[in-house]
Each structure stands twice: as C-alpha cells, then as structure tokens.
Image 1: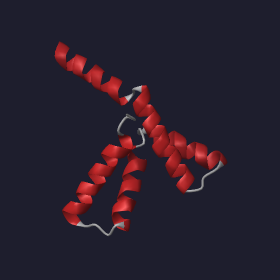
Image 2: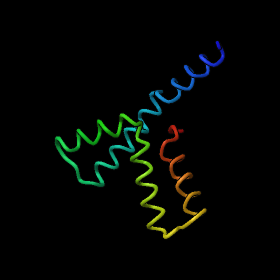
Image 3: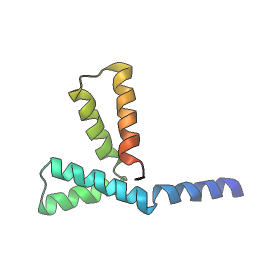
Image 4: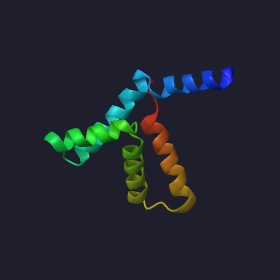
Length: 92
C-alpha cells in the first residue's frame, strides 16, 4: 500500500511539475493564437485548456496535422502519438 501511494504521489509530481505546466501553457497559448482568441474568450479557453493539462488542445492540433498530411490508419495513429508526446514533453 505504501509503494502504491508513493508511486501515485510521484506521478502527480511529474504531471504537475513546473516544466509540465509550462508545456501545457505553451500548447494552450498556441491554440488560442491559432484561433485568434482575445479577451474573455481567450481567458475562458486558457482556463479550460489548462484544467486538462493541454492534452485536449494538443490532441486537436496533432489530429489536424495528421489530417493535413492525409495520413490514415496506423500511420495516422502513430503520427498523432508522436506529436502528442512531443507537444507535452518537458522542455530539454
């Protein structure tokens, strides 16, 4: 039980580390810029996007990129996974 609790706390630390939050913020800001949001609409977008850590925004951007490249099936899945990992990876 102690190791499960420790693992859970460590994973939360990784998910909510300053680097992970900075990456989520950059993904969310990029989405707001692409949608040309300003004012209250931008604030609402940022709040919602940051609540899920930017994953939904990153998924939408990666899906759009795969569609732009006209990928299908396993190639599309692979590209979306690669793109998501890159978008949400901590800066090195």
